[in-house]
Length: 271
Length: 318
Image (cartoon, rainbow over all chains, first blue to last red; front, side, top):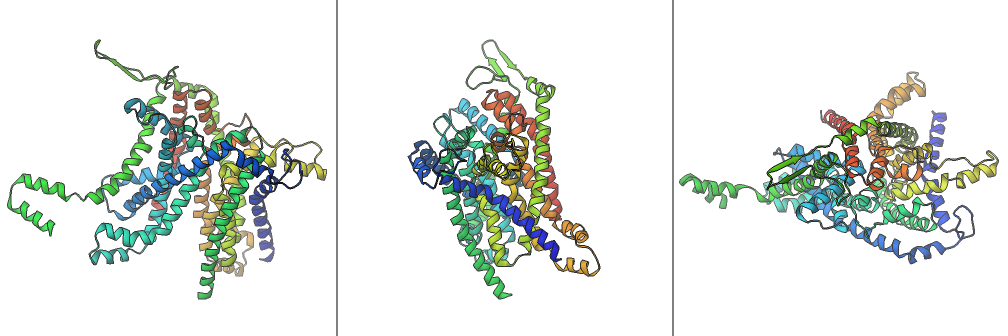
């Protein structure tokens, strides 16, 4: 038993090193004075300065945040509706269809989603003149479409674990459907709704492929700008940007972990 | 109250009132909760595929948008002309380039999925067997990269793998090699990129399967004289099977249509169908051909995956 666990631990630790080594290297080299990314020229914050003076990156970042915020918010509303319908409504015409349409975007390759939405927008513009040209609004529509599927799946699985007796009790006590949802069901599924929003926000912020298809000229999102810079080779400004992103995520995950640890400690005490 | 008066009307009087009542009886709240998400997905998810199918049957043209219309008509001369062009599909099957790209995508995604499983299993096992407090820490360590940018994680490997990158510098300084290894822009780099970026997707379902496993089963097997390796393959692996299947699906599905990883880490000879579609669209500006590639991809790769997923979903509910 002992020897096997030693083998197990070493391979697992190697796995963690594999996971973190490239990210650590990225962070360290973002503080490198030298422009040559592999030559160490001493510590410096130079590339952070360059990053904040780069209007192209800053504009793209602002646009991406705006798109991610709106897409995540719309996707949460639509996705929660779809998830609620799928788990709480008894049979209705089209339920199978809705279930299929919710699960399909999860397995759809991004290139197909992007191409098909672009062709739809072009065809719609030809037929009714809307959307005229492509830009922020078409990217938002595309992001809402694939994010709402993820929200729906998360909300649906949360609802299926939930004790239905609470909702039944509220109905017995005469709650109207709308107050039943907003006063009982929604507070109960709030953790799922929040994680759906966060997941949508991150996915929208991260999307390169779909945005490239459906955006118009002059509407480059952050991943599109990064991709065009990185394609030409390693760039120290992108290292600085990556470090900032890793820092933000690390703070968020640490806060979440702190919460998880507190809960785990409570569990240990109970045991 | 209002419902009661409504039904009293129906009982007492003629049919037009009954009709009025029926319209009133549709629960508009319930109706819109169903209709709004369905309408959205119908318009922006389902209809686009019909458009793709339609355009795959047209021809490229120097026009805006760059394809010919299938249907053209002239009311004065009273003719309607429907022209379906099968040329794109014929070309797809005649030119071995496309078939090779489909097969090579499946091969690359399959091999990467296998290696992801090999690396993820010990990590998931370690997490599942650790104390609840360390477990939270280790789980966060696995989840953290998942929340950071996918594009930047792929980019991180460019700095590692290139000719004067960190791995080559390290190996040269230790004297293990005297010529830098060519790693970037090869299939090898693509495998690393896929394994690296999708590792969390494999670890999490494996962990949740292994966590549910009863450890006393292993102890019982040991007491009965089973060697650790035998218990592993006869007990742990079968118990983890749902997690293994779920993880492999979560890695294989996005990997097979991947564009970013072959574009940044692969060489010009790394064939993957996602990249072929992208180039067909953005470089050749051949929208009908890109559409045909998408339709075949949908039928050959996506539909089978959806059918497998559905059949699994049914087994679970049974």
